[in-house]
Image 1: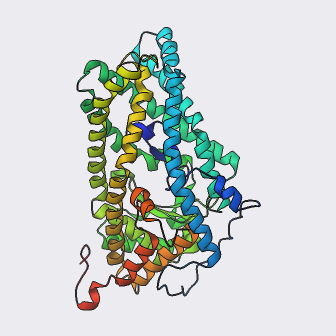
Image 2: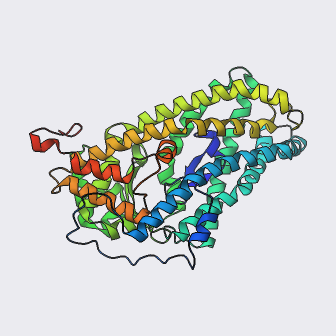
Length: 454
């Protein structure tokens, strides 16, 4: 997803929130190695074609030599790119402090008005937009790499418009969060980290609720799934009923991803009244109905197994630790370097880049724990998908393996992922592991039943 520069830092809530201008992959950056390895124009998308009526049997994740090399190279670029983006982000924040941009914007805001809300409306957009512009090389590099590998087919004009929309959303949310943060700091210098943590939680839930209704349609076209594929809608409804879900056909949607990407996906998003099933048009072109039902069954698993509230509790705990550690460190940081940066104290608007700097480091340190936590629940969702489709489709394990084979081929997943990469950055199990699990998980053959779906 396209990174929203400030909500990145403040609604995970003060570093690295993503909006849906692209896929679900993290920023990868570092495109120079690819420039030496590939040449020519970006590959054109493959024409949409109906999936094979009889998919080939999958026994393990394999790629032909040319795709294997591309997948492995892409994985290397992603790995080193994410590390490069981390250090680049720190460098940007250090330059912002060294150049005293925040104090300059603070002075403009305070000279313009005495009202704190209006000061926030002047200061926050100026600072956040400055950071976003300084970080645009990493966003451009991500798009360049995805275009060179043929995963993105989005033109640069369209991409820039999506980037602009994403930043406008970030500025709006960032303005609100900055105002809340510094109001809290001024009113409670010793407890601000706790009160701001409390305030961030309902905002995070609200954003999750609002995203499918307001944000997603800004980046992609949506239409009722029943209008595009009535048979698929019926199959998904049958799976949802077995899962005892509450997503009726009128909340199942087709999404036009194919004008920007060749990647495939289907997902369940939102909470409460905004909850819905979304199937990408690229998925409908490259997978058959049974395969799409499995993908959606996996996503239903996240809801049925209460992964959403569990994730919220986990990330709320991370934020609690981040804000507390940030509170403990920011005073010493400003005591040592604040004068050189023209920062008057923690309650000064200009302290924001220093706080973001600390939270960026804390987020990176915590990433292996966050990734492992996510991989655990993604594995459970894989298992749930097999169980909820068992009996609805013949040989649900083979269907699941076919799904991950297609995902791997289209998204160029590395058949032999770097263990350090998996440890640090993989939010999902690797494709080879997922296929092995699908092919070996079979409690029914011994007279048993599923763990999650009896």
